[in-house]
Image (tube, rainbow, N blue to C red; front, side, top):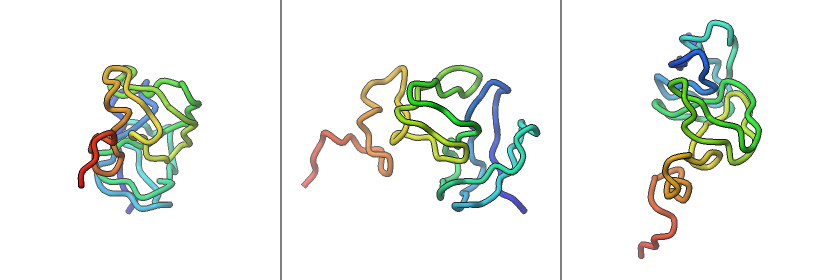
Length: 110
């Protein structure tokens, strides 16, 4: 049985994973029957965003039918959409967070 993700609004170019997805796993995109056979390009944890279509650098990331950020580099369908390849339109500080831990990168702990 394929993993699942959910597109919230018909205008969204990302979906939210409902469970962890392994690299190359085929996903059922709930809310988007027109997108068959989407495959995760990498391991992606549940609750994170996955690209449903190609996005060019500077293109808006749409979730909930609204732009939540913009691609900071090209993003392919099936890629994890997170801090390493998009930036917020609302919170400049989030662009400097570590993608794995969410920690601020300008702070050094030692």
